[in-house]
Length: 155
Length: 139
Image (cartoon, rainbow over all chains, first blue to last red; front, side, top):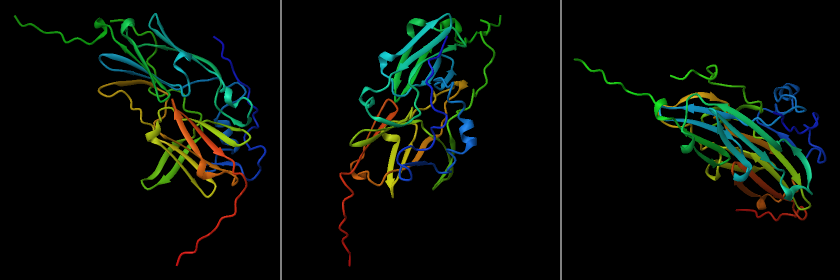
């Protein structure tokens, strides 16, 4: 599986153009210290790794993925052999293509992430919802996979 | 029972690589994470887009004070309720926060904000010119 990566100039941390008027600052003024740059990882080989959470209760397995700014048709969810595969593509917004870009941190391109499920699920009852940029996939467990209370008979 | 198809995962996977830190509010030090942003310039405005997954209109607070623009987003998504076990978590529960120093030639009264599927689009129009201001003196 290959990732489409976008090359971002490693030195693109200071604001070009406006000089002292258009700057970036955060509460701790740490954003552009060399240490902070390191913590972001190498921008050269950065791929899109959306945060994924996996939860389980007695009836369902739930997978949540942070995928802000996508359209429903650009998100693909499929299930095969106990592995949930989430993939998507973010395209750059056409209306800004002619604008000058001062800063570009958001990733543009494809991503794909498999999630191995901890329990068998009923494929035909899986539901996926996309709200506020978060994709929530609810996978009901099969009856056999649910915990069962076994009655003890005393004779 | 089926055998596990993977090693038991840790409850926390690789840490969020985005800059994060603490800021102060009335409740003391709070954790935050900086959202990723794009900034574009068109001929009559700047456009800033910030990724705030889990944030909608209700959790969003944008303030401009003295050429300082603060974007603060509170997540409104909750982990599944009930007796759910977290098997793997990469997302952060912290608020999103980022502060910018903006060009004084922006017409702050006409800043427009929209949020859709976790992406905030802020339009900051450039002023026609920096207009002279009439100051009323109160008694």
